[in-house]
Length: 285
Image (cartoon, rainbow, N blue to C red; front, top):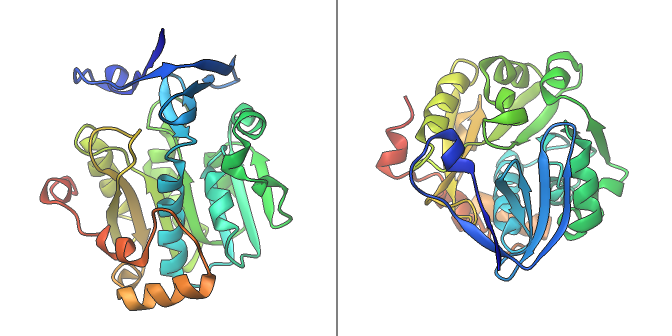
């Protein structure tokens, strides 16, 4: 019997904690230009994508992460037409964004190997999203794109790996400053901010680096089984504090108008997700 043991917490800080999956079949394995990539089959979660030994997404629970990282900002904004996704090579965020009447969605993914492997071996995650005429895929450095582009966006979603390896630069003050520069008035930035019980520094560092650039910075929580350690946090940044505190009834009206069918996201969860436990709130400072 072959097992995959995740290396996330043993590589960043040894907390004596890990998760492992029984591998029923290795589907694909390669060393891309940036990282070790592996896709394997498991009994509980179906196909699993791991990069440098860290779980990125699974067929079983991807809908939780992709729905919440997408629908919270999209419905909070209410009329986003231009969206930037930094990372997101599996196509799950793009799939969800394209459920709205957007004009243009740019995905900037540094590792083309991730895109090709996921399209070939986990095609249900993108569900053809990369072929949508509203979508543009750039195999490029998201840091460089944000620093140099003249485009402006209503919603920016940073669907990154943890702050190790190629994803580390997407957690810097300079990158967040560039995100602010290319954001339209009333825009929203969302970031991946780790599991705070085990990765509390991601919340603290993220808050301290976002706060100089945005009037309203906070986090919301989701529960993804394969992102283990309790709640996962997603970072929120905007210059309009009203966007984060909108009444449930207003979000529900937009949700109904969009005719969305979701498996995790609801307008009730949207509002409730911003109610942070004290141990998370205390990390913001």
